[in-house]
Length: 553
Image (cartoon, rainbow, N blue to C red):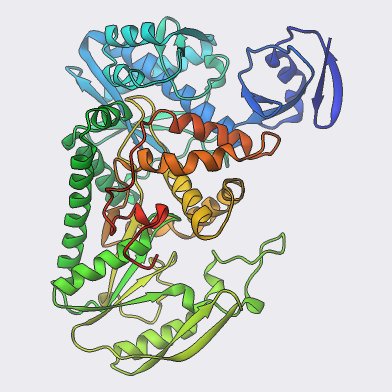
């Protein structure tokens, strides 16, 4: 017998009892289906069995590990159905390109003709598999055998990926004989994957899946609200293809061949070209006096602002940086979170009226004394910093609310040029395993906060969900209002960030709640070969996080 502690209560179970059986016992206490368990802080699938005394935790679709497992399993189910319906002989590969609007954009490649009738059949087949509750089997194979298997099945991206894996064995999953590799855990059988939809879009289709806020509801895909973001994401995929580095295996090949410096310089040149295009667009309309820059956490907004300012100067303009943070209300008047901490994410933490009064005065040609917010004292100060706009002057304003017209309500729309900046990772692990853009930003922030604020990786992971909630509420709803979007992700950066992030992640105690996420990120970074940071240009966005930037960031 083994003693299993659940929610502080100890119970005895026979050695060999499956976690699925225990989950069934506790399922009535949960609104959503139990998908995964945690055993002494480590994730385990439901088919695993009790082997020793342990503390057990249940995960549903309302938890991050649970919803990630659900999405991964749903993609696998879709792949099985698509190959069965379309015929593997007609398919070169099926790629999960990126997430968009609470779903995944997927493109089939080969001779298969993508029609509404075909997608309807795929959707019907998926639902049939759900009804059949087909077990999702897992087997461990030698890495060399896995490489041969991937080659046989024409999964060349996975073949390239595993040539650089240090582990000796690989876990493969199968549904009814259809076998694949996935980064992370799966549900126990197809019966758990009840909620999904397929929507034709552009040259592929959207696989729409529930989010952890409501694991039983499939969101509606609103294409008209994602057109600009889709264009940028698709452009990023084309960049990766143009560089011949769409997946981690291809990046590792470049690194192993000693060609990373050329790739690095090409990537930086592509970004500089895009920044120059944005500056030229702004410079073509001198009625624009306010460049409003917004984006989620760790998207590289500060470095982008500096580089854009240089390009604006090349256009004959005189840029002046303005940080919206300097218009914070005094800390004593700041809104607070339920736990009593100050909330610097909401619009109400800013003195909006003073911001609009100053910006309107500058637009009218008046001289304005500009404030500076002192984070140490929590007060806004005036130190004789005066500003007056001439014909060639332009303000470059950066802040998370800059795309929200409530921030700049008094400024004429024709005087504003809006830019949305985000790290939209163009690299995927392989054709079926995408890299979430939030992972890249989390690792960026972890490295930067450790270097500049002395914050531990544990601290960064702990507060990340709160940061993400703020982004969903205050940034993402306004991204389509941007005049132009800029992708700040670089194809090589995770190979650089790896050296800085891994020691921080290894420092997280095993008994802490953040250890599970740290372990996931360490496994993720293990896919990458490392790259020395010495040759990264000093004006690179990556420098904002690892240090050594020529800008004050």
